[in-house]
Length: 498
Ligand SMILES: Cc1cc2nc3c(=O)[nH]c(=O)nc-3n(C[C@H](O)[C@H](O)[C@H](O)COP(=O)(O)OP(=O)(O)OC[C@H]3O[C@@H](n4cnc5c(N)ncnc54)[C@H](O)[C@@H]3O)c2cc1C
Image (cartoon, rainbow, N blue to C red; front, side, top):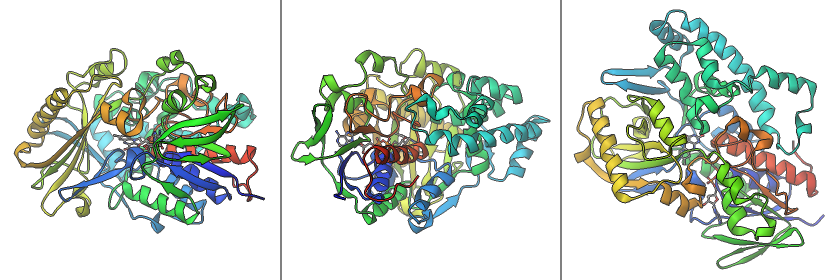
């Protein structure tokens, strides 16, 4: 059988995953990437001897990465070395009020018990349910393409879904088990990854607590970009062709079928298109209006996950009182959340996160130096000006210096900021979003933008704006799900793997 040609637009985790699965099934796959390097939001860059991961820094759900490589007869350790972090992370509640979260379950139980008597047993019960949700959620639900209700019409699965608290909020669910303020903050933290308020996030997502506490926080030595490098290597081993600096400008559709993909310099004939670039951009900017599945009004009503103001900093000394992952929860999240979701504006007293990978990994900073990545979650679609970035730089530095009790600013030898304008310029991100579409109940499974175009027969979507949602593991899964759907409809030259 002649090889069918597939163009994948974008080389983020979802594009890499889709491309590799499709090439493995015998398709001729070409990835067109607008930037000059792969990884999308997980690219890296080097400056002044420092190596920075540009986006993701938390390696959670190691089983998802492992099962990805295993479907090709490989293992993660063929491509990168993983280290389990201990402590997993530190939460800074205020001056001299730091809480290290131990990797060991026994130590975590002791910590809970020391905060609130009886809470260790509550944690056991909470995690028992969360483990069940993880099992059903990650092994069954997230691999559903979300194209038809019939996918869920299996009695066992329906019962499972009902048992999984889909209709109760995680906010309420956590409070059924815990009452101590710090424990509640700790348990609500993983929900930030889903891009929505705990009040609007189904309790199903306590599976994220299972991922956090039971499966642990890991780090690929050399940085998160090592995952990208491994995935590109595997993709190339499978025959995927990568073309960089290829900014796709149009998908040519004839009679409802995508025929060609056009970049500024080249034209590519294709049998199928898999778009892993931001869904909104592909629909609104690459397709003629008649072939767009969703209206402007539809997009305006979507709850986007937050954007971020980021700082990549190089410090010419080692710092005290910082772990690899540090959550600065020294202000109340309520008003900050309000400024992200309900009344979008630059926040007054934001929470922020600092990653210092050089605490674990000497390869990411020159000797005697510290590599810092600072992230402030902010609403999408804000006016992004240099003065505003600078104001927040000083706001964060004031708190960081005060809370960690050291002078940092004068030792900074490298500084780069990154926010909305950069997300738009680099990734064509709708409203400058960082993490795609929020995982609210009304934006779950079938209620997400569909992984298959409703108007163009051979156009599919993957990535953080479609199923299953934002984050590195979901993006990896999204690529696998779309590859399976393509193979169902466009006879795969080789046996289809499911
Ligand atoms: C700051 C930040 C921190 C994060 N932290 C974490 C974390 O700690 N853990 C975690 O699990 N997740 C994290 N995430 C989320 C995670 O990184 C993303 O969900 C995931 O990387 C998205 O992958 P993707 O393939 O859907 O999209 P992308 O990575 O955006 O890939 C899309 C690709 O399409 C390309 N593209 C766009 N338009 C075109 C065009 N016209 N032509 C050609 N190519 C085009 C882009 O350049 C890009 O390479 C974070 C994200 C950010 C931004």
